[in-house]
Amino acid sequence: MSVRWHKSSHSGGVDDKACVELGRLSVGVGVRDSKDPEGGQLSLTAGEFASLVRKIKGRVER
Image (cartoon, rainbow, N blue to C red; front, side, top):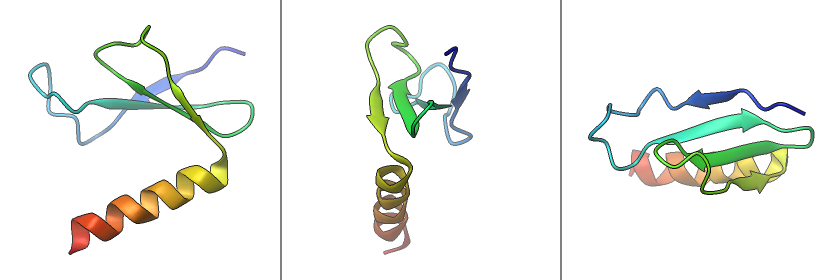
């Protein structure tokens, strides 16, 4: 399966040290560093990804 990667809309360009890309996998979501696309990826189930997003949003809102 070919994964189409999408860069975060919060990425700030070439000097941003915290750029991520997301890709839909056959089961779940892939997360990788956009500056090192060959460096591997984190594979999460849909539930794990949803939980991660909730936790991140909770930290941002505080």
